[in-house]
Structure formats: C-alpha cells, structure tokens
Figure: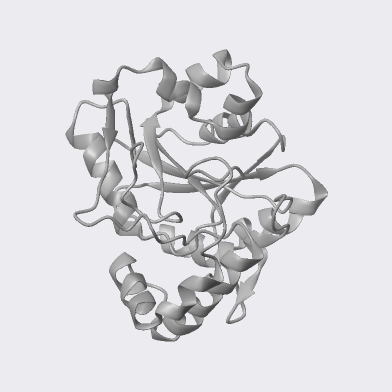
Length: 247
C-alpha cells in the first residue's frame, strides 16, 4: 500500500453560498465534521487542508490548525497551484482530492477508491463519466508526479480552477479507473453548494449526529428513505461544472 495523503480544498468565498464550509449544524461547522470524519480513512496517512491566503479564510485555517490538520494557504483562483503546493507538505506518493463542502462523505468510500488505485495499474481513479455515487461522495485519486506535471504544464483557466481535467486529458482510457457502487445512487444530491443544499444536509445531520458522527453512506440513504419529502428541498438545483465543485 503506497503512502497516501488527503488534500481538502476549502474557502469562504464560494459564489453560490459564501461561507458554506463554516456553516454550523448542531453547533458544529460543516468543515469540522468533514475533517474529523476523514481522519477515519484507513489507507491515508495525512489530512491536509488547502485554503487561500485571503483574510476571509483565516477562520478556515484556524479550524484546521485546531483539529491538528496540516494547513496550506495559497492563491484563491489558481486552485491547481494551491493544491500542488499543498502536496509539497507531504511525502505521500498517492494523493486524494476532496472538496470541503461534502460533510457526509464516507471514509469507507475514500478507502475503496484508494484500494482500487493500489490494487490495479491505474494512474487515476474517480467516479467515472457516469457516477453511481451521490454528489457529495466524490473523490479522486492520483499520483504525486501526475499532479506536479499538471501544475507545471496546464495553462487553461478551467484546468487551473478544477485541478484534474488536465490529468485526465493526458491519460489513455485504460490508465483511468472508475469506482462504482452496486446500486446507482447518483440521483441524490448531498453536497453543499447552495442554500437549498444546506437545508437538506442540515436535516440529515440533525437526525444523524445525535447517534454519533461515524455514520456511513448506507446510514445516510436509509435516513433519506425514511424522509423522502426532504429530497424536494434541493431537487431543482443544477450542478454547475459536473460532479466536482471548485473550492
């Protein structure tokens, strides 16, 4: 098993819902919950928080520090550069890209992506062009060398903002692995990108957190199935740029 690090992008200046990563449920910031849960990923050795050097993100950096997470601060707009610089803080050769607006993200799902990457001859593992995972449970795994190549070579604004499109574009199809669930759950939108998304996540967490913060995807889906009317809260929201939300 190759040494792996999780790098979480988070900032306060989200366009559709500013300050979303520090919105609180049950007195707890969403990013606090996500970072704490990610420490349960068994195949990762380190969690790194990649935020910006803007004063608005002082609180984000402070939260990461309080949780004992390694923090890197860089440019807001050059997310690829920020991510690559954050990767310099670890000796891990395998990196996992995550965004800080996914508080329900299941550590077991992250471990499953890492197991696929470790067990097959892939250069990149993700959810695939047709994900079976809910939005909010997405992650990407790739090698450190691939990331540094992208940071040095990518010039298009879209590539700099979204980190991994340049990597995928350079790889043959057989070098890319896709993790899929036995059942398609992609109809569920469980990220926090808008106020409507937050209202749904808030209800879920108010139900789940009293039983502990070690819930998994199966538990989340069972909660939704018990409250199907909650899905109406964000059913009309459209994702702007595919399954990956830029932070």
